[in-house]
Image 1 (spheres, rainbow, N blue to C red):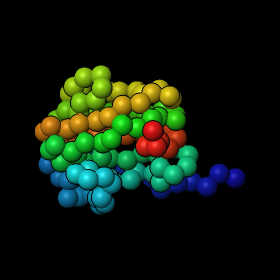
Image 2 (cartoon, helix red, strand yellow):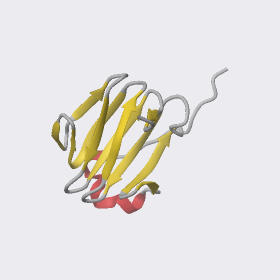
Image 3 (cartoon, one colour):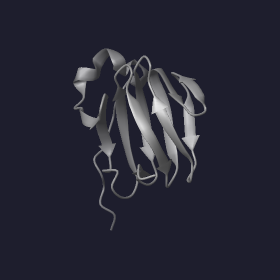
Image 4 (cartoon, rainbow, N blue to C red):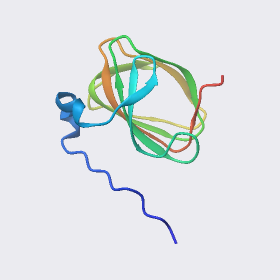
Length: 119
Protein backbone atom coordinates (compact mmCIF):
# COMPACT_ATOMS: atom_id res chain seq x y z
CA UNK A 1 0.00 0.00 0.00
CA UNK A 2 1.32 3.45 -0.95
CA UNK A 3 1.79 5.89 1.91
CA UNK A 4 0.19 9.25 1.14
CA UNK A 5 2.43 12.31 1.35
CA UNK A 6 1.56 15.67 2.85
CA UNK A 7 -0.79 17.76 0.74
CA UNK A 8 0.69 21.10 -0.36
CA UNK A 9 -1.41 24.11 -1.36
CA UNK A 10 0.12 27.50 -2.19
CA UNK A 11 -2.37 29.99 -3.60
CA UNK A 12 -1.53 32.80 -6.02
CA UNK A 13 1.88 31.36 -6.81
CA UNK A 14 2.84 34.19 -9.18
CA UNK A 15 2.27 36.70 -6.35
CA UNK A 16 4.46 34.83 -3.86
CA UNK A 17 7.10 37.59 -3.87
CA UNK A 18 4.85 39.86 -1.80
CA UNK A 19 4.47 37.26 0.97
CA UNK A 20 7.73 35.30 1.12
CA UNK A 21 7.67 35.39 4.92
CA UNK A 22 4.60 33.10 4.93
CA UNK A 23 6.81 30.11 4.01
CA UNK A 24 9.67 28.41 5.84
CA UNK A 25 12.96 28.98 4.01
CA UNK A 26 16.31 27.36 4.71
CA UNK A 27 19.75 28.03 3.22
CA UNK A 28 20.43 26.04 0.03
CA UNK A 29 23.51 27.58 -1.60
CA UNK A 30 25.11 30.97 -1.09
CA UNK A 31 22.47 33.59 -1.91
CA UNK A 32 19.77 30.96 -2.48
CA UNK A 33 17.07 29.82 -0.05
CA UNK A 34 14.84 26.77 -0.47
CA UNK A 35 11.32 25.89 0.62
CA UNK A 36 10.95 22.12 0.12
CA UNK A 37 7.59 20.93 -1.15
CA UNK A 38 8.39 17.20 -1.16
CA UNK A 39 11.44 14.95 -1.37
CA UNK A 40 14.95 15.65 -0.16
CA UNK A 41 16.96 15.83 -3.41
CA UNK A 42 19.01 12.84 -2.24
CA UNK A 43 16.88 10.16 -3.91
CA UNK A 44 13.74 9.98 -6.00
CA UNK A 45 11.63 12.92 -7.13
CA UNK A 46 11.49 16.22 -5.28
CA UNK A 47 10.13 19.74 -5.67
CA UNK A 48 10.92 23.08 -4.10
CA UNK A 49 10.61 26.81 -4.37
CA UNK A 50 13.97 28.53 -4.78
CA UNK A 51 14.47 32.16 -3.75
CA UNK A 52 17.55 33.69 -5.42
CA UNK A 53 19.03 36.90 -4.02
CA UNK A 54 20.25 39.45 -6.59
CA UNK A 55 23.60 38.27 -7.95
CA UNK A 56 23.20 34.67 -6.72
CA UNK A 57 24.60 31.90 -8.90
CA UNK A 58 24.14 28.15 -9.06
CA UNK A 59 27.27 26.33 -10.26
CA UNK A 60 27.31 24.10 -13.31
CA UNK A 61 25.37 20.92 -12.64
CA UNK A 62 24.02 17.91 -14.55
CA UNK A 63 20.47 16.61 -14.60
CA UNK A 64 20.24 12.87 -14.09
CA UNK A 65 16.46 13.01 -14.63
CA UNK A 66 14.07 15.64 -15.94
CA UNK A 67 14.00 19.08 -14.32
CA UNK A 68 10.92 21.29 -14.71
CA UNK A 69 11.32 24.98 -13.82
CA UNK A 70 8.71 27.71 -13.74
CA UNK A 71 10.08 31.21 -13.29
CA UNK A 72 7.59 32.88 -10.92
CA UNK A 73 9.21 36.27 -10.31
CA UNK A 74 11.83 38.36 -12.17
CA UNK A 75 14.09 36.29 -14.44
CA UNK A 76 16.79 33.65 -14.45
CA UNK A 77 19.70 33.29 -16.84
CA UNK A 78 21.42 30.06 -17.84
CA UNK A 79 23.65 28.86 -20.68
CA UNK A 80 20.70 29.16 -23.08
CA UNK A 81 19.51 32.71 -22.36
CA UNK A 82 17.52 34.92 -20.03
CA UNK A 83 14.14 33.50 -19.02
CA UNK A 84 11.44 35.87 -17.76
CA UNK A 85 8.68 35.27 -15.22
CA UNK A 86 6.01 32.97 -16.61
CA UNK A 87 8.55 30.82 -18.50
CA UNK A 88 8.50 27.01 -18.27
CA UNK A 89 11.85 25.29 -18.83
CA UNK A 90 12.23 21.51 -19.10
CA UNK A 91 15.82 20.31 -18.88
CA UNK A 92 16.12 16.68 -20.08
CA UNK A 93 18.26 13.95 -18.50
CA UNK A 94 21.94 14.41 -19.39
CA UNK A 95 21.69 18.18 -19.80
CA UNK A 96 23.86 20.55 -17.81
CA UNK A 97 24.02 24.28 -17.17
CA UNK A 98 24.91 27.01 -14.67
CA UNK A 99 22.43 29.62 -13.43
CA UNK A 100 22.82 33.33 -12.69
CA UNK A 101 20.36 35.77 -11.24
CA UNK A 102 21.20 39.42 -11.76
CA UNK A 103 18.00 40.77 -10.20
CA UNK A 104 17.07 37.77 -8.04
CA UNK A 105 14.10 35.51 -8.68
CA UNK A 106 11.66 32.96 -7.34
CA UNK A 107 11.50 29.64 -9.16
CA UNK A 108 9.41 26.48 -8.80
CA UNK A 109 11.70 23.50 -9.45
CA UNK A 110 10.56 19.90 -9.87
CA UNK A 111 13.23 17.22 -10.18
CA UNK A 112 12.62 13.65 -11.33
CA UNK A 113 15.97 12.56 -9.82
CA UNK A 114 18.71 14.28 -7.80
CA UNK A 115 20.94 16.81 -9.53
CA UNK A 116 24.69 16.15 -9.78
CA UNK A 117 27.11 18.96 -8.95
CA UNK A 118 30.11 16.60 -9.28
CA UNK A 119 31.24 17.48 -12.81
